[in-house]
Image (cartoon, rainbow, N blue to C red; front, side, top):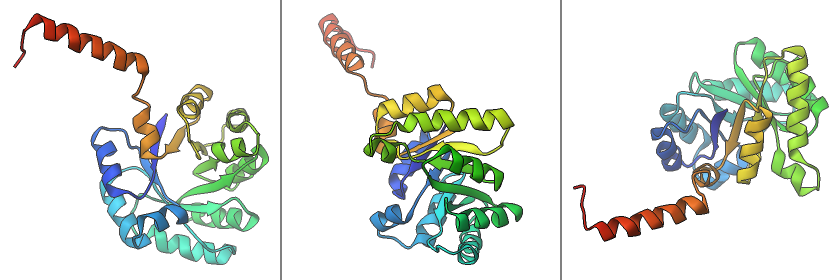
Length: 217
């Protein structure tokens, strides 16, 4: 499973990228707001760090305006994936932009039917939002499983980009189900390394080593 980092924090992206933990980056208007930076400037900097897809989201709601914004964002770097919402206008924009050879990430997906439409429109990525479904007492993982089955049934090339990842179980379950990509905040990705038994074992090893009185360096 590929790891995308859901942030515009350049320092956090660089740290994870240096460890080989970054296959791409996702941003959205809320993330750009949090960064406090110009969207073109910060997106260009991220594209210079990461070789994989970097999602930059349009803010228009009409297809023709989304297409124009998408073309503008795609000029930032060759690895830009234009992010459009899963609306009828967004699907129209997806069809045009993918027809021009651009990567398109169709976002805010909450149903398998929506995901099917996005694949038919040629989306490079579909972004189902797990955490937001959990918020309304629906199991976001059921959606990932449904999309995986549908895409496999018909050999769609669209990659499932599991989004709104909030917990370590979200990450694990996405990998088990077969999501192609997950995008998560840096803190969630780093927390995947944590386990109480690892900490306990390391504490014991450290205590026992001290008793030997030895040094390696």
